[in-house]
Length: 520
Image 1 (tube, rainbow, N blue to C red):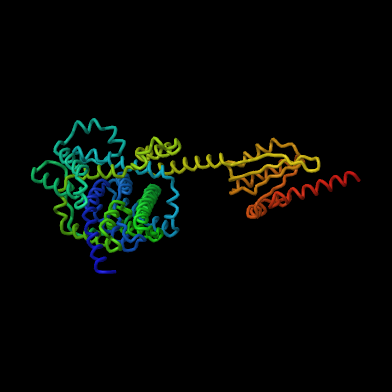
Image 2: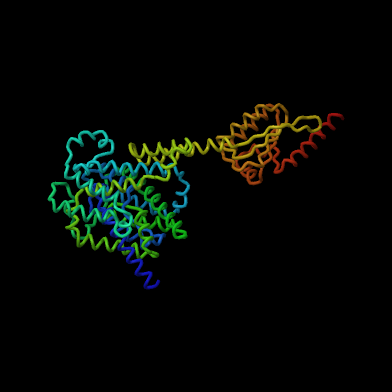
């Protein structure tokens, strides 16, 4: 490492810390755990993930998806912060196990419409959750409650808070890029709007007192009767954190032409989130925007991420009293921009051009994410995607039925091409029902995949046709033949060939022998 590299990494880390500060505070507030919980989430996870992770320049901390689930956990366990921390603890442990089994390499197989619907749903949730603080209300409510009580909220507007929120939104959306390249819009809003609110002496809700000391040690605990709920939230956090981190890691790979270590990264994320639970901090993941800022500022090593965490710690210890005056409406304005940034514009721009199947998956996941539950949303998306994939594969199966004349006797030959599994095995039986000869050859040499359902269906077919005194002859690859012989005893009683021509030769010899016997 050169002096220049070290300098670039330290400067990048300081820049990222400045970007991360308002986001950490905002995510802490919206989670219901408090601004300090968001700040220490960025510090603890940011430090550990940078030190131990598998992506050198990735910056970790509270993110939108993780904050939404944490907010749901806080709402589920009101006045029971220890149980919320138990959720975070188990999420970290589960994430470590994900890393050990290298789950990260499988995340890339999640269909894009699921990710799109999920991210759009998260973005909308974050935006809706800012309605109350934007209009001056201090209450943390569910999405359904906020949406169904909009008119009541409009009747009780705190116009001073709304003014602060609108000024923040104006800064966040309309600050020229030439300025935001130097100073992030969120930081401009944080300082300018806080000073404005202080000078005008506005009567609006603020973050409140933030202790200028290290967080107290917490031992997470919970009622055993609440284990299923705790684990549900924990699994959700672990999955979201892993997906979020993997997506950011892939982005880093594409930008820097590197190959990240997903196993190492998930273990580091899990350790970081587990440590967060002992200090009352909210969990997080690899943060895309902060990581991009880190790369753009010349970071090349993990020192940048460590520096970012140290700078945030210094701010937490020495500048906390100033942060206590930050208006909640200001943070709401920042998070509204964050919510819009999370929306998947790549998919939304081509929404009229995508297939009906992709659109159905995306909209289903989106609606379930916003109004029901994140885990149910993803599970439903995976189920629908799997069903549609199976349907498409089953349509691609090809079965050709033709007759072969050998010594004046017709032999039915059925050639199967494609995947033979539970969704396509019944098609084979339908084709067989059209046969009329006493010998049937099923040619499976071009079968790419054979599952247990198809094997059992073949067993049923052989037994059924044996009762009719019809002989079934199989032509199949050696690898599939071995599986057949291991699984079903009936396959040892029939003729199995590896090449169709061999089957034809033996059939011809067999028929000639039968004719010779009959003439005698």
